[in-house]
Amino acid sequence: MKKMSLGDEGVCDVESCGIVIIERYVNDEWIEGKLENVLFVPLLTKNLLSVGACTNKIFAALFKKNSVELYLNKKLIASGILQKNNLFRMLFRVVKVKANLHAASRLKL
Image 1 (cartoon, rainbow, N blue to C red):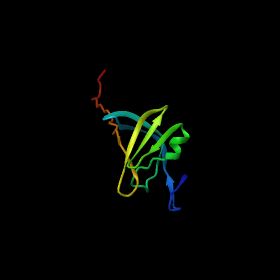
Image 2 (tube, rainbow, N blue to C red):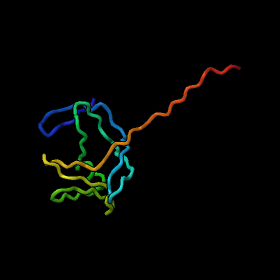
Image 3 (cartoon, one colour):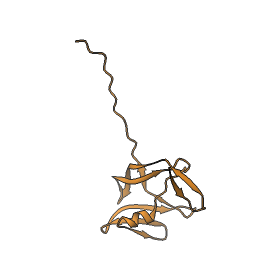
Image 4 (cartoon, rainbow, N blue to C red):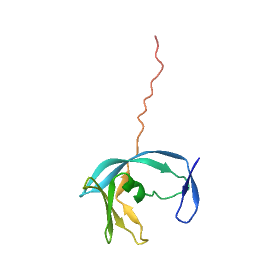
């Protein structure tokens, strides 16, 4: 099992890695998007976004006094706001995937 290091020198187990479908608030509208290589860490109660992982994938991050903006090819693709605890809350919401189920009775031939 993979491990993830935390800022307090703690270590958590990474249970899996995958894609999360999101909506991101940009220029007064919600736009569908996806986050790739998302780590599922059961012990964490908050979702974290790694600025280093973003900039390694050619995104640019611009930090301002009360906000942060993420750019891809000079186009604004995501933003966040500074909270009282000095962490930035990204303006994302997770799209809950719904399963389509269908039940059929037994067929008689």
